[in-house]
Picture (cartoon, one colour):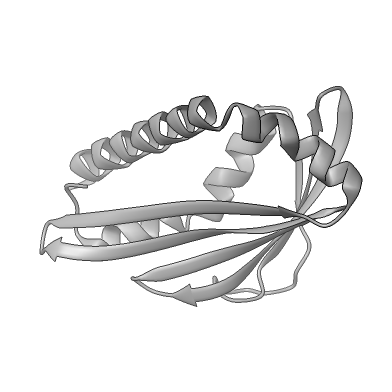
Length: 147
C-alpha cells in the first residue's frame, strides 16, 4: 500500500468505522468493554443473519502492537478463530499488509456449517482477496486525500 506504516495501522484500528460498516450491512454491533483507549481487551458482540438464522460473534482485541501487529479473537457458539493483521514497512511511504482469517469448528453442527465453505474454498478465497484489495484501495485513496 502506498502509505506509511503508522498511517496504515491507524486506519486499520478505526474500530468505530468498522462498527458502522457492519451495521449498514444489517448486523447489530455493541461494544461490551469499558476501555477508554484502543488496545488489548476491547470487545464487541455482533449479531447477524447467516443462512436465515441469527448468529452471534464475540470479537476481542487479543494482540495490539502498533504499528506492526494486531490479532482479533473471534468466538461464536461452536466456532473459534482469529483474524491477524501484520504490517511491514517496505519504505517510508510503502507498507505491506498481510491479513489472515482462521476459523475452527468446536462442535459437529459447526463442522456442518463450515463444510460447504470448504467445498467452495477457491471461490471464497478469491472473493476474500478481492474484498481486501478493494478495502486497501479505499485506504490508499483516504490517505492521499488527507495528505
